[in-house]
Length: 468
Image (tube, rainbow, N blue to C red; front, side, top):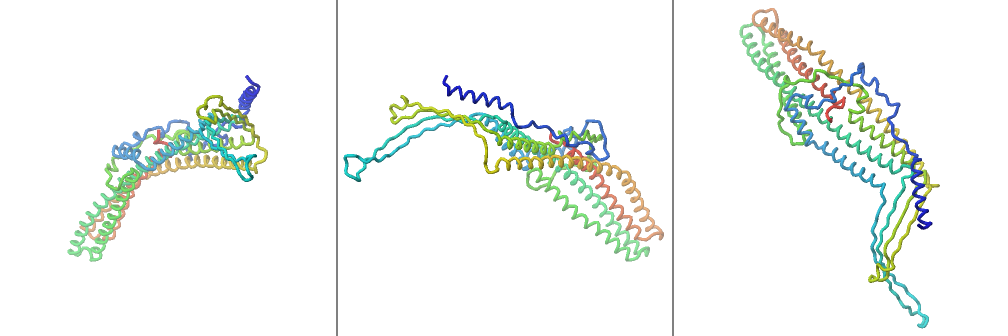
């Protein structure tokens, strides 16, 4: 073994030893990150959470579940999120190959033309000679990962890949929630349309009754006009409800990745929600909320980019080798034409116009921004859980009172109509007021039920359910 070879081996061994002295740091979740008290007025030591339930168990309506399955198969935003994962996978594979040396094949023929002035020729006369050199060789280059630059690059690529996977999961959970919320909204509009149509039928009959009472001199013409206006007030609600139904159907179709059309659906009164809306621990959002996980992976990427920026302040070791055949004649190409070279280079940055400092300062600033985004995503998740749970609680709280209100107003409508028809103890204004209040209460009761259903959907998404 030659002294030259020994030197190269010594350089490689030195690089391997120096790699143990990496200047990069190992990622750890920031200790300053706070997860306690994320849920307002909620304290729990139970780790059970509805986020662990599959969406097929949360929603009992098979028609809704069929729509969700179609959305998961066809939604265009979800397909784009999957393509982002494909691109991140390609970057990750490339980062893993950075540990290996490059290898290149070089084959060429070079024609050289040289002009010489002959000694025995008149002045100004030149003789041109032409030579051809044939060359076939391999070259390779390898950079030793002394300070952990390549390792940090690979970890950054991995974190980016995991972030895109979490982003896809976030799109999926939002998609499920959007389909469910619009489905329940559609059922609510259906129910409101049915009630409004029944109310219209009743008011049409009421107009006929008031006209008969006018003929009997029990009411005046003003009551007839008021009853007709009350009928038309119900009529104008129907086109608006039909428009909302059509627009909501179109919205669902967009979520399903298909052209506008009718949506097969059930009835609002047949819907049910899980009885136990367990929240689990706030710290579980770090594992269950896809957007929170995405924010942490983005922070990890920025952390590794800071690691990489630090390595540029230290020397890099590169080994380059080349070898092959070179000859002036093809017939003797492989005879006595071997060449090779081995070069080891150690590069220490001294002055490069502040590029390394700029790179490190920028990376550190971006890392801080990523941490702020991480913390913000966690706070937002806690807010969404708190809002959704409170919305559910308020909907339930209104339910009993709303039922009693509707029951009382139904009696009020019956009483005032009977008093109007059989005595003079009341006037049509009382009948009109009770009828209008009843319809408003019935429509509000449907909205209360819708609020409860949508609050469960929002709570399920806010806790991170739907992607597992």
